[in-house]
Length: 325
Image 1 (cartoon, rainbow, N blue to C red):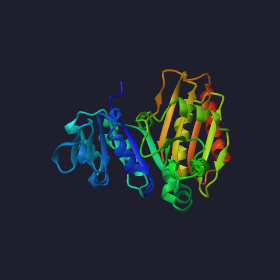
Image 2 (cartoon, rainbow, N blue to C red; image 1 turned 180 degrees about the vertical axis):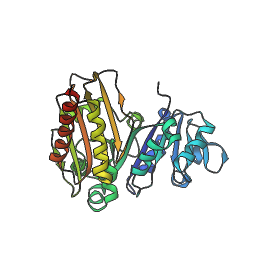
Image 3 (cartoon, rainbow, N blue to C red; image 1 turned 60 degrees about the vertical axis):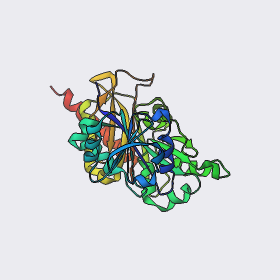
Image 4 (tube, one colour; image 1 turned 90 degrees about the horizontal axis):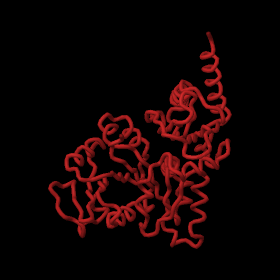
C-alpha cells in the first residue's frame, strides 16, 4: 500500500497566473488538508485566512491548508511540514523562470523524499494573452510545457479567440498534453491532484497518438512508440539505461505503459525525468482493451527512427539470448 503523500508541482512562466491560481485554490473547500510550498508569502496575500504562525515560514489557514516558504532544499522543507502534520497532499509552486527538472529529479532520487512523497503530476500555467510569443522566445517556458502532465490555459477571457492561438502554441510543443482552462484562478482541485499516470484521459490521448514524431519546435520533439508484441522485462531495463546514457539532458520526459512477456496481464508503468527514472511499477490490470506497449518520449533533437531501432534491436538480442540452450 502506498502511504506516501501525493506531490503536485505547479510551474509556469512569469505572469502566467500561478499566484492567482494558488490564491483561488486556498479558498476552496476542496483544497482542505493541503500543504502548499511557495517561494514568498508576500506574493500570495493570505492574511485574511491566517489562523496562527508559530514560525516565520509556516502559516495555517482557516480552510485547513498549511503554507510554507521554501528555504534551502526541498527535503528540508518537507521535513518541517511533516513535523507539523495534518495534511494529505503537497503542492509546490516554482518560480516563473525555473526549470522544474531538478525538482522532479530530487523528488525521485532523494532518499527522504522518495520514501515520503509521490510525484503525482506536473501542472503548467500558460497565459492565453502572452503565451504564444513567450513560448516562441523563451526556452524556459518551452521546457516547462515539455515536462507538463497538464497545462492550465489562463486569461482566456482577455483574448478574442478564447485561447485558440495559445492552445495551438502548446499543442505544437506537446500534442499529447492534457489541456484545461482556468479563468481568474478558478479550477477544480482534482485537475491538480489527479495522478499523471495512468489516468483515463492520459491513456486516451496516448492511444490517439500515431507511431511517429511531432517536431514543431527547433529542438523539442515528442516521439510516441507503440508495439503490439510484449517485451522481455530485461529489454525494458536495457532500453531505459540506453536512453539515459545516450540522450542525457536531452531526454526531458518518458512515460508509458509496457506489456511484458513475464506479466502480460499486468502492464508496467514507466515514468522518468531526464536520466532519472522511478522504479517500474505494475497495474493490477489493463485499463482498456488495448494491451499494446505505448511509450511517449519528450526531448531535444530526437531521431524517431533511431529510438525505434534501438528498442527493436535490444528486444531482438534479448530474445535470441533467452532462446539459446
